Amino acid sequence: MEKHYQILIVGGGNAGLSVASQLLRKRKGLSIGIIEPSENHYYQPAWTLVGAGIFDIQKTIRNEKDFIPKNATWIKEAVSEFNPTSNKVICSSGKEISYDYLIVCPGIQLDWNKIKGLKDTLGKNNVSSNYNFNSAPYTWEMIKNFKGGIAVFTNPSTPIKCGGAPHKIMYLAVDYWRKKGILDKCDIHYISGATVIFGVPEYKATLEEVLKKGNIKVHYSANTIGIDANNKTIEFETKSTPSTIKQSLSETTAACYSINEASQADLTNKVTLSFDLCHAVPPQSAPDFIKKSPLADASNPYGYVEVNKNTMQHSRFANVFALGDCTNAPCSKTGAAIRKQAPVVVTNLLEVMDKQPVTAQYDGYSACPIPTQYGKLMLAEFDYNNKPKMTFPFDQAKPRWTMWILKTKVLPWLYWNKILKGTA
Image 1: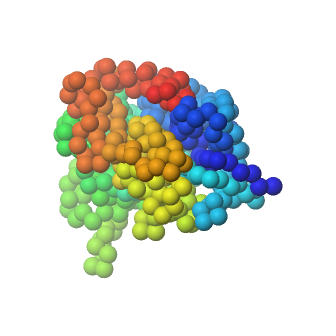
Image 2: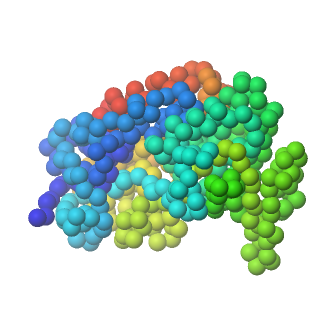
Image 3: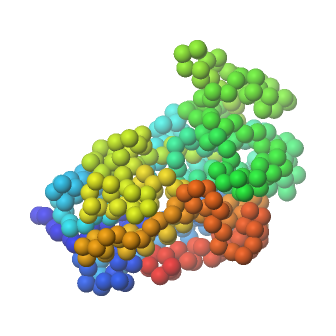
């Protein structure tokens, strides 16, 4: 039987619950349905801290039902199709739900299978990822028990949620090994699909010093394609020359790599690197049910929802809005971005409902709290133009203890008690 809602929200994560709460605070009588299949709600920003041994994984999970706004309806289904011309959503169960207005925010998809062998070895064989609830605690076991050798940290070439997470855990691991007195026995490699360590010059300079201090070898424009748990090797593609790669590898373990020379046709080298510890981050993209839908941006290789990057309104369907990690807005995919996008969506949606022009604008604000060592953190805030947007009256490019407290104590409390309830 078909059900109808004035506003239908697809996704009950940070974005979906924040928007629903804010809408109902402005107009109590709205008929809102929230489609979310999971009974659990996760505070994922703390998983880096879990992997660093300073946060309990169980404190990052709560019941979804406890955060559904009082006057909204939770639809425990999974979406399989969008039909925006008919204002309908079809669920995997076959249930059809119609709407007057649609908000799309189901998050991002982790494409574990894009790295051959990763899914099968995750959480064992000294391979882990903080992007997975079950394996994040194993990251700490690896770091704590590491006695030296080759440690590899990867970052994919695709956009990802929390873009700093792949190197945050690396800095904390390096600091732990330094304090343990074994850093001189560690050969640390960062294999990144990006071209720089950070896109904002002011914050980039700080992190380059951290890389230098930790003697971390960085391989930019390198895309991880496979992990062989049995042989403890990782394979990545790069357009760097073999000599450049050789120079960046440890001379004391010269046998730790091999290079498959590129052909003239593709000019890409496949490099195999041995490891004793590997923290891997999977490529990411829009959920498949968005990719194949009319809402997707046909020109975007990752299938994100096509929106106006300032108003968050769909470019072709005026009664559809989207926010969070699933959109093609060229901002970093973070909870901080959602916090700024949510009131823009709320204001503009209500204006559309009132048949008024949309007025609220999102400037691409995002924030990335990057711990550079235990007890110190750099809070990077910036906009679409990669210009710093610092909240506090001091230089946030300098790692501070106060920002560490913000990350480890204040933000988790704020998330559960204010953000999801639409009051922050």
